Image (cartoon, rainbow, N blue to C red; front, side, top):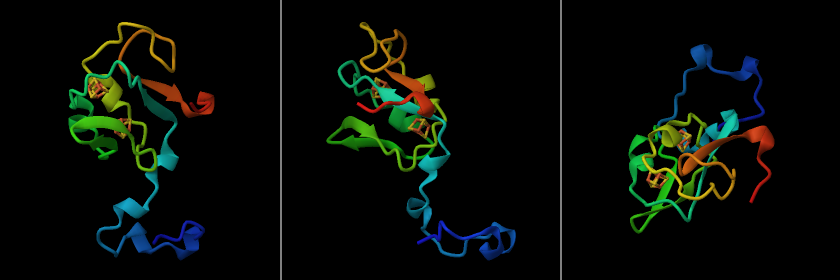
Length: 112
Ligand code: SF4
Ligand code: SF4
């Protein structure tokens, strides 16, 4: 488990990570400045976002997209860029037309 309270003086030389298989323990979602939000009702479950996400942060169950792993999603926006489906009604969170996945600034996210 990484010590998130460690100072730079306690970091390894060159930032080398010695333990293998530790990526799950690093909560990279803390880097995110934009949050992807999917309109659950208008998603067609085509899985394109799952294919393109570089951080395996699209959660899938029984062949359906069920959400995001916000602990590890870095907010790169690739899923929103690659989603091929445009909403037919305003997006259920943003109220905007456009893609099924839309990026919302973390500072403006109010939960839902
Ligand atoms: S790419 Fe868009 S429509 Fe396809 S599963 Fe992802 S959110 Fe749904
Ligand atoms: S914003 Fe980037 S890291 Fe987050 S779910 Fe979309 S593609 Fe994956």
